[in-house]
Amino acid sequence: MAQLDNSLGSSLSLFWTIPFVGMLLSIALFPLLSPRFWHHHFGKISLFWALSTSIPLIYLYGSSALHEIIHVLVAEYLPFVILLGSLYVISGNIYIQGTFSGTPLFNTIYLSIGTCLASLMGTTGASMVLIRPFLRANAWRKNRVYQLVFFIFLVSNIGGSLTPLGDPPLYLGYLKGVPFFWTLNLFLPALICYLSLITIFYFLDKRYYEEEKHNRPNSKENEKLKIHGIHNVFLLLAVPATILITGNLKLGEVTLLGIHFRIQEVLRDLIFLLLAGISYFTTPSVVRLKNEFTFFPIKEVAILFFGIFVSMVPALSILQAGEKGALRSIIGLLKEPSHYFWITGILSAFLDNAPTYLTFLSSCLGKFYAGIPEKEAILLLIESKPKFLLAISCGAVFFGAVTYIGNAPNFMVRSIAEEKGIAMPSFFGFLLKYSLPFLFPIFALITLIFFRS
Image (tube, rainbow, N blue to C red; front, side):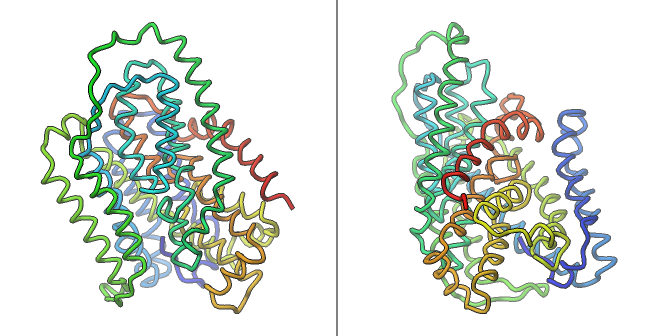
């Protein structure tokens, strides 16, 4: 996510975050209070909050604000949608055939495999490939909402902890100079999250299974495990490979509309579109029919995140202004790894976790190694104060599971589930009924074990 220049960020008050709060409340309340209205008009609501941010900013700050908003849309939002859209299309062309039982043991193993795959193919890629078979396996189950919530917790978030390919904040850290395999230091905190959540899930699933097993359909002839559209697996793996390769290229820059684009990033997005096109036109339409594939989920995500990206600009700008911004009183209190873990985490749950990670990484480097080149400062931080980088990394990744907008695949999973007729919890329902009781005690335990002073 781009930022307004520092002088502008330092001049904005928290009043400018009202449209962003309004956008979040719209996502939270309209589907609950007026679902029919929301279904037909969510695009207009998203546009309203985007204009409520952009028009006053441009009126008061002129061309600099206009430039930043265009930058957000062209250089940040568009690549975001291209990446998600490519993964969605490619995964929609993969149909995993087989007889899936939907038992507690099967579901537990399935989520465990998905958690492992997320660090190799990214949380979005793993989520999009695995969500449809998971839904089919449990189609006969009456209580399925909690299953999808734990899918979001594990596959869409915690599983992306171990490599820079798993989650965008870790990838940005890698580009800034964090060694590729340093992220393996997140293994023990991630393992505690995984073991805690998968254990809770198993016993919760077992309890409901005992109540529902009499509804289980009679066994049919077992289908052999087979992947239709298997060439798309290689196209899917090509997406994180493209991110890794192009991120290490230095091909110069081009300027369009006053915005500087790195050529390697333009190349990356073109490759994503090419991969999606190859996938769509080389896969028989029957595969998409089997998956009940439609473009509505990605359309919904694109429209809603348009409003989120634009209305988020002032909030991120204030945050990135650091001690010169409206949040100076909070940022000035950051002294211990536990502080960085919680502030990075909580803000990552409601803002884009990638720039939040970079903001607090920069804040930490400035605090301990002011004036030292960034890559050298990062290596010094790893050598002498590794808990701080671990805290920032864990906060950005783990807290992405706290809300639907904490990480992009969360909303994708919700949208696909609702398209299948599953009544997912509202924004606040997800937060209050699931995140607070299940995630926050685990995060408190991780704080005591790894980040206590």
